[in-house]
Each structure stands twice: as C-alpha cells, then as structure tokens.
Amino acid sequence: MYTDVSLEGQTAVITGASAGIGEACAAALAHEKVNLILCARREEKIRNLARQLEETYGVSVRPVVLDVRDRKAVKEFASQLSSEGLGIDILVNNAGLARGKDPLQSADMDDWDEMIDTNVKGLLYMTRGIAPLMLESSSAPLIINIGSIAGMQAYEGGGVYCATKAAVGMISDGLRIDTVSSAMRVCNIRPGLAETEFSLVRFHGDNDKAQKVYQDLEPLYAGDIADAVRYVCTRPSHVQISQLTIMPTRQASGSVVHRGD
Image (cartoon, rainbow, N blue to C red; front, side, top):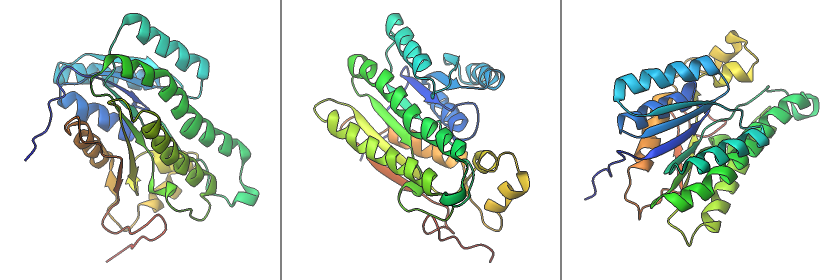
C-alpha cells in the first residue's frame, strides 16, 4: 500500500494560473508545501493570488506576467530561471481556451489563431523552455498537460478547439516517448464539463450563453481537476499516470450529456 509522496520543498511552474483550474492547482500544490511560479497575463490577479497563497501556506510564490503565445517572452522566462539555477520539479501546462462555437465553414479565423497559438504553440513553447531545466535539476520531473475530453471526439461547432486538445494528447505522448530514458513523467489530464471562466471566454463574455452550458446538471469544478493534479503529483516516482479522464456523473462523452432529473 502506497501513501502520498511528500512534495514539500519542490517547485512548480503553472501557466494560466490567475483563475479557474490554474488557480485551483496553485492552491492545491501550495497546500502540499510546493513553492510556486505562477504565470498568467493578468498582472493584478496573479499578484494578489501569489500574496494570498504565501500568507495562507507559508510557501514561496513568484508571480510572472507571461503570455505563453509569445515565444520570445517564454524563452526569456526560461533563460531567467536557468540563470538563477532554480530547480523545477513540476510543470502544469494549464493555459488554454476555446473561442466561438460557429460551424467550421463560417467560423472566425481569428478565433482559430488564438486557440492554436495558446493551446498548441504556447504549450510547446513552455515545454521546450522548461523541460530541459527539469531534466537537469529534478530527480523525478513531472509535466502535467491539461487537455480535454474534446481531444477524444469532435463535437458540433468545436472542430478546431477539439483539434487543439487532440494535439495536446499527441504532444504528451510524444514527449513521454522522447524522454523515456529519463525519470521524466508526462500526464495528460482530460476534463469534461467544468464550470470555470471557460465558457464565458468561449462566448466572448456572453454570460447568458455561458450559463446555459452548465444548466440543469452539476458540472465539475476547478477544484476537482486540481485534486487530480495533486493525486498525479503525489504518486511514487516509479509510477506514471499517463492519461486521466474526468467527467461529471451526468456526462458520458464530449457530446452526450443528460440534463434535468
């Protein structure tokens, strides 16, 4: 029988950490006494969160204003960590979004670019920048990519978003293969319907449309995904959780949801 491995004193980088799943992951790992480097675009929110977590859990929390789509900025961020000789044990690639839900033949191509640049290229930039540091500095490095059940099956109006999350799965598999001779572990966590800012962002701030996504069922919450992240992180170093799919009880697949009694 295994017990949770202590994470005390480890250091984690989390992207998209200013709200939702990223914020919940930050709190979950801070509770485990992990020192944090929190990356997000919204400066005020990320600084307030860092201060709150330091005061609550007594860990070191560094807020970093970073857009993962900016390859130069990500490269400079990784170089800065390297120059400091700071060891990184955990990377949570959480930054991601959906934009729009129009049919492919009439969708806004700017929405496509934002999803591809964030969900795929941003994840790649962060992984390319941070993974080498982890392999050098950590005895049991762990990368967790927050994918989606959307990456398993396309649904109406979601073709490009689904494609980006399918790419997260393939990138996770490829990295696991490329690092198999090392102690690196790679996990792709695939949430189903989770009530965060996700739908509000998808519908460009239309709160009525966003609320209907979660209407008449109890969805997952950010804390449910953060608890899964904590579970993956606290496995013994010889255990690799390669994929973890989590859905609310009334959801059977990306397109099959029961609403009401």
